[in-house]
Image (tube, rainbow over the protein chains, first blue to last red):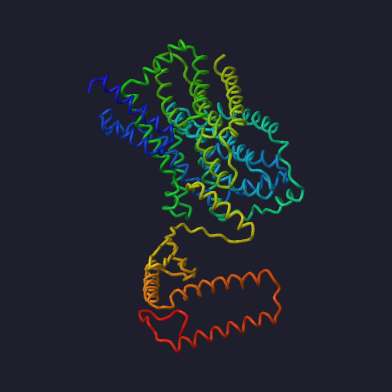
Length: 426
Length: 163
């Protein structure tokens, strides 16, 4: 096959696959599977090259964290913390919203966002039912705090895991560079949310008192397992903090934690493994094959050259372009395929220029993670929360969500712009 | 709306949270629920049962009238019970009384629910309760009397509740 024909073939498969993923007409894993196989059938990659294109660091880190969470969540820890937080708020609806958002953001920094909202949403709904109050502001806060919390760490959101693995950025790099700005964005966002929602959140005193009747101890179902899980999770996080010093990848640390917890817990191996989100894992693998294909035929390098022509190789312009484009794209489209494509693009920019590309990685991480807050389809957690609300007869419309969340997202990107400019680009 | 596994987990977590706050001990056993349907002439016989790894299987007949058949130790037992039940229905269908039997069974089910509501929602005087006891005793006698005067037609399995 001539290079020209190969370029057309690869571009067609890639654009068609991404187009169908974006349209959401067919399950994203199924269509990514077809696209990846097409790349092999058309001999863009052979099977060995396809397997090599899969970033096993990202895949194994995701699987390992899912195993740890699947065991930890059976202990009732998350419900305990959420109820405790609500009780500390003494039934005050605004304080409960803030407390649950803080819990969600912290949990999201350690777990993936979808898992976090699936764990916190049940308690939130029980609390709002008890207070006889509209759950929509709480669930919007849940979405926003999970996406901001996920931005803060290497393991908080899949785009960060992918960026960390490919850019060689470690857990502490994310803590030093992303956590401070995530905290600032959380504070700014919830200050603005207070202005939007505070007046709507009123509850009678007798209903507030009902919150104090919840017994958080009753949610803890297996204390020995809870202790074991917390020890393993604590050691895993310590491993993340030290991984660059002890010469281990984050994925190796997470896999060790998962293996040890599987061994010392009495959890059913089949059940724990069944609970892993295999469709997501396979989706990642197929995307890596798709992106590996366009990288192999030189499309990524060509786009990188075009981008550098536009920005004239200027670091400030390139960084801010990546930040804002990532945010706007991620508000409407799945940020995982976008980031999977952007990673080799940024690597190509690094190869083609003498530019320090580290700010570009932070711009991509901030844009892709925070952009997900913009619309109801911006991130998987948003879609999941919308589904939970619909199941509970509280439909949240695309426009209704966007009216609140899109301006908040733009403000968070504006704050990020200032942050990147002051600390990396000046 | 169609529930994804994530939404099922949310529902499960909400139920567990509320039940545990009520003081319940909740054990989650993962398994599958099988819905089974037979057409016997115009009559639809439906069952629901679960299969799980803990070895406790619940069988419920859902139609033509609901009946909790029981808890069994293996899925083979469940198939055996359904096999007999279906054979009995096929046999009973030949009777001219079949439709009356179905109607009466449905009425008894409604009666049971009404009695449940009556006791749980009202403070029933002892004299009224004794009337119920007397009528139930009469019904039990009627069943024994009817059994003794009727020809047995199914022999593959002994009755569960009639000696």
